[in-house]
Image 1 (spheres, helix red, strand yellow):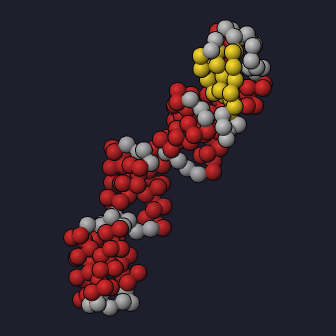
Image 2 (image 1 turned 45 degrees about the vertical axis):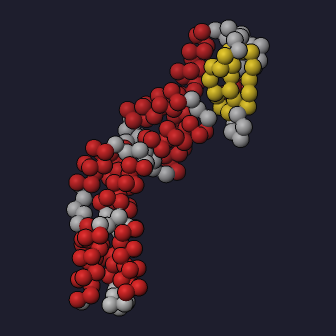
Image 3 (image 1 turned 90 degrees about the vertical axis):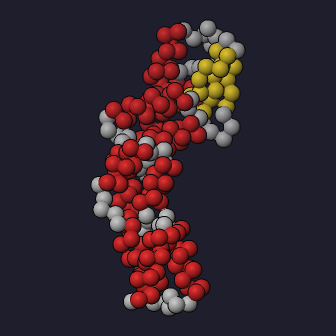
Length: 204
């Protein structure tokens, strides 16, 4: 087998390698140089296997660890980041699976931590929290299990947040009341919950 051509991936420090005129893999430039993968170079099945299962997976795994060191992420987010970096889907998946096996990547832990931080920094409904986690690629069962770990009462959360933000305002004013409605609905609370909160605040 012969490396027939090599292309630099635009905007990334990655090289696309073609063997016998067919695309074979994408590799970081540093590893491309280390392994002498230049055009017209002969490559054995053994070396190709080493590149695909060893060099590429190691590089993707190390890149994923850098992402996770900077910010905790879901498996889906890590896979997306690795693909965006230029790694092939199978390499990204293998790297992610290895990190899951050693507990470095854990969607259960991620979901619990995410909910805890969001509840601390921004009052949201269960529905809104579930929606955000779903957008991060978290499985529905994991979301449900994580939410059950927290005692989240949508009404109590909505009332506390509405009082914090609008407690000094006169809710008998229609425009102010509409602002509170929009605010609570934007945070994922139902019309019923928003109405109940506004009713209580008008009485207080």
